[in-house]
Amino acid sequence: MVKKIDSTKIIYKFSAANKPVEDASPGELVIFETLDCLSGQIKSEKDSISTIDWSLVNGATGPLYVRNAEPGDTLVVEIVDIKVDDRTFILTVPGYGVLSSKKFSSKIKFLEADKYVTKFGSLRIKSNPMVGTIGVAPAYGEVPCGDLGRHGGNMDIPILNAGSKLYLPVSVKGALLALGDLHTVQADGELCVSAAETSGEVLVRVDVIKGKQPRFPLLENRDIVALLAFGNTVDEALKAATETAIEALMFSNNLSFEEAYMLGSLVVNLRINQLVDPKKGVRAEISKDFVKIKDFLTI
Image (tube, rainbow, N blue to C red; front, side):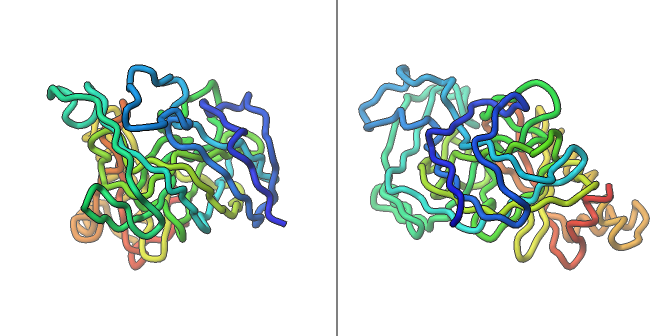
C-alpha cells in the first residue's frame, strides 16, 4: 500500500527542526496531498486580498524522512503523477509581479480546469500540471516556503511535471522533503505573481545518490537536463546557471573552456522560471545528447 501524507500536515518553513510526519525508503512511492498556494483562504472572486494571511503562503505537505539520506548525498524525487482539483484561481496583487510599478487593482479570477485544459473565460489553455514548491531542510536555520535556494523551495519550474526527476542536495539526515503549491498551468516567468493555482495530489518516488551533490538543484526529463539557479537579480541567476552549465559541458565532452563556451551558445537554452519573488529563478536546459546528470554531480 502506498503511503499518503494528507494536507493537514503542512509546513511554512523548511527547517531541520520540523518533525517528520512519515518516512520512506529509497525506491518507495509516496502520495502528498496538497493545499493551494494560499492554504484555501480564497473562497470566491469577491474575497478581498486585504484579508489574506500572507504567513500562510506556499505551504508544503510534509516533511518526509527518507531513509539512508545523509548530508553530502543527493535526494532524487521522481514526479510519477499529479492529480489537480477542479478549484483553480489566479490573482493580481498591486505592487507585485513584473509590472509592479504600474497602477492596477487586485483581482481574483476562478478558472475551470482539469489535467487537460484550463479555461480562462472563453479561452482554452492546455493544462500542464506542475509542482511549484518543493524542497528539503537547509543545513542551518529556516527558510520560508515562499523563498527559493539551494534546498529548493518556491522554484516555480513549469517543467516540474509528471515524468520529471528533481535532484536536491541533502543537508540534514533524512532530507525532510516537503512539497505543495500545484499549478494546472504556468508560463515561464509567472509574470503577474501567480499561476493557475490549485490543490491536489502528487505521487512521487524517492531515491538517494550517495556521496555526491550538485552545486544547484537539477531537473531531468526524457530529453533534457536542466540546471536550476537563482539570484537576487536575473543577471546574477543567469550567470550562475551559465557558469555551471559550461563546466558540465567541459567535463562531459573533454573540452576547453573556450570550446565549451562556444558549444553553450549552440545547445544551452537559458529560460526563466519566475521573475516575481525576491530571488529570481532560472534554468539552463541542455539536451542529454551533450550532458548527463552525473556530469553535474561531479562538479
